[in-house]
Image 1 (tube, rainbow, N blue to C red):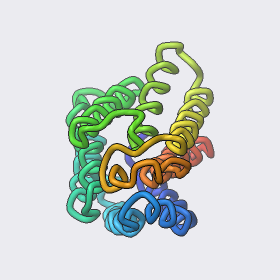
Image 2: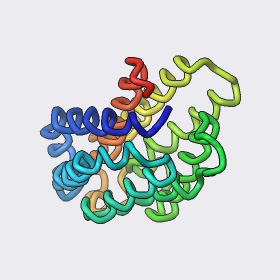
Image 3: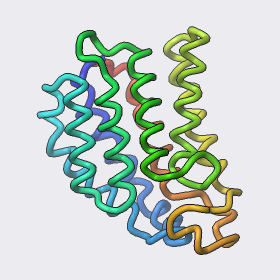
Length: 212
């Protein structure tokens, strides 16, 4: 799979976030500042404009540029964290060989580890990491079991959905939500929801056969 798929993925993600913007905003108003979707859409709009350029780069350079763009356009904690994810993934990619499935899994896992360090957070604290970490774990597990590409993708989507849903009964301990105490219990974390939506959008595109 080459970077030619990036414009397709970015457009799909942009549409999915737009379709679910109202729901996510309500979630973020309960447990956050209420601006998560606005910040995310600002970053996605910048990526849409950048799409043709990203499609002409190698993965290492594309992910670096993608991360830097999100870092500079999104703002807020999410911009810092998503920027960190992609920039760290870029650093983990070996330019001397084509990006393989195992290479992507390793890069993604290193990106997630960087997000954990930047956010000083881990699984179980009602954040986007409750989606990102299970997805990384499931990818690695599927790789080790040598499961088929279809099963791999199915597992990724399921891990994202289960991780997102798990935040519903969690007590928030990070960010503004941490000040609300038990009021956050019973609500899905907005960052976990958008992370799940984006990951599942990627899975849907690839499943549809757009392996460019």
